[in-house]
Length: 492
Image 1 (cartoon, helix red, strand yellow):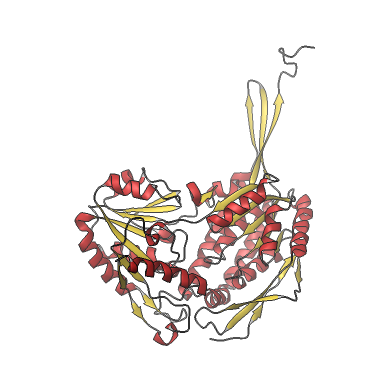
Image 2 (cartoon, one colour):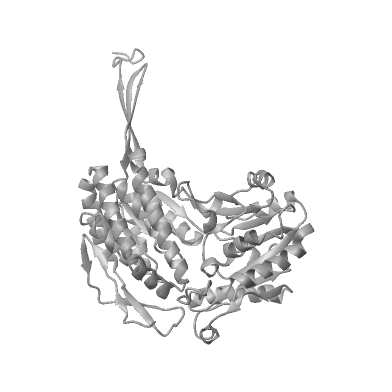
């Protein structure tokens, strides 16, 4: 499906910016094919984008919320109309199967529609009359938002920031990842066209651009999804001007399978497999380590392998039979391979899973056949670190106290899942340190955009999705009108 490479541009103050230096983005399925080029913007262009957003904010902050909603709904319809084209582009540049790319766009639109439907609940001022007089509480926009997004779900992890920021009256500068810059740029362009110049700006680039977006004094808030290490640098850069932040970071999400889990429940086992290997395991909220009660461990592993071999079909993302495509980039392939080799060197058993649909692609593309790792130690890197690839360790545990301790000793706490009899699973879930815990499902299968999402510990700061995610782009402003203006305890 090789096509002419596309070229995307930065958008600053409503205008496309021509850039001499461009970064190629290859197709992970066919790395010798260039899907397109993104600009390598300069620090000076980043400053221009921030200035454009800063100037646009002065009037956009006071725009009518109904107008904001109408503009966003027009953008939503245009994205719906362009979904086949955008999904194909996303699949080619990212490597995720076409159904997965379509699903990412569907989740993005679902959130954008929710945000349109609920923003008035969030920004409508509240007035309270009381014995001391009257108080008005308003929920005002913050200012310029810098949004920095990753490559694994580039569209949904950008729109999760764009929609609430713009609908609540903020302006934005968006910087996508260079590993998946093309489809998200198309989406950003569609949205930007529906808003006044400067409200949504788009830049690409290297570290100097990222540093400017996180340190510039005109930026009021940073919305970042990515690695914990990068987030630490962002927090340091932001500290000089005490910026607001929403950070959704790494996770090493665990699935806990209790002794009363039905190992013959094929649908549940399929959900487990999908929660391990969707998007080739490259999802922050995917189940990356599985703990199974020792009493059912052996039978669970047997049934799990059966379920995995039925669902996992590795190959060309455009083949409708394929469920798992390549890994996004060569460095990620090497990292996942290093974790697997480390586990093997320590005596763990590595079992290949699924069926190879396109054996001719495996050698040249960034493919890894999904693997199951058995016999790893609880603290081996493949268990303790975020793999972000198509491999998963399954480990036995003896009692709930042990498995809860194993879960909670991690520095991360994004999502988790507990599998078993529902009321029993809920009791265990209440003791788990995580932002979200799902019962008898995991990962995107259990995501609900109506409710807040985010991590605890080093998995993040703040929440996205739900009305709480909308409110995180507002400042609370209290206006007091006292009834008695002459307070008796202050002398004349």
